[in-house]
Image (cartoon, rainbow, N blue to C red; front, side):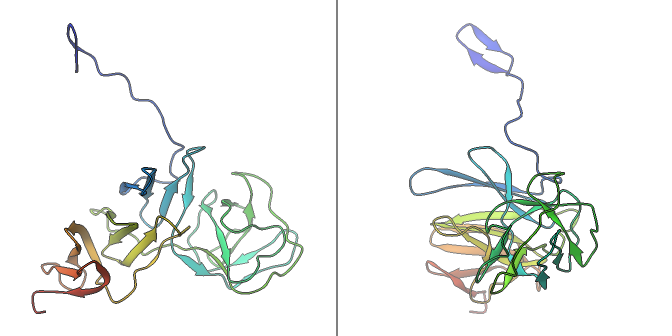
Length: 233
């Protein structure tokens, strides 16, 4: 129920706002840029996503991981140890240039044909045709990776600290995303503990439910999220 001028009325029906995540949501968060822009993140058991504010699709912004190779072939084959499923979205990045036919930071989709735990092919649209490449490119080629799976009773936890968004779960090293510069999450610098929970306490970032000691809390340095202390100093 919601209040009205003449009393109370029914709450309006919910409507679909975004495209669906590729799998069940296991934690979501919204952050605010300095200009007030809302940036929405969500997670599944082993991947992190950012909402596109124009077409409301989800971009995989998980930590990049180096692929063993991307073939210069028709169709191109990406060699990478994975647990992808057909239809999973992901993006490429490169320290040099990607093979001709592929574009960095563009969402591609895993296709079912020839999919294995060590290699896969990609399409530009969900269920589309396999992409061909016409050069080898240069440098190290990376794809958005798959994290260690979240435990059944847990959720990804989030916090915003200035321009930084942090995502954590006990099986993964603390992940960080700079709202002003980043297109994917990265491992937080320093040696933060793996933690199930995260909070902002003034100018400190606090981590709890530690993988190494579930009953201990560690906190960052003053406005410095790359060093951490516990009760022992």
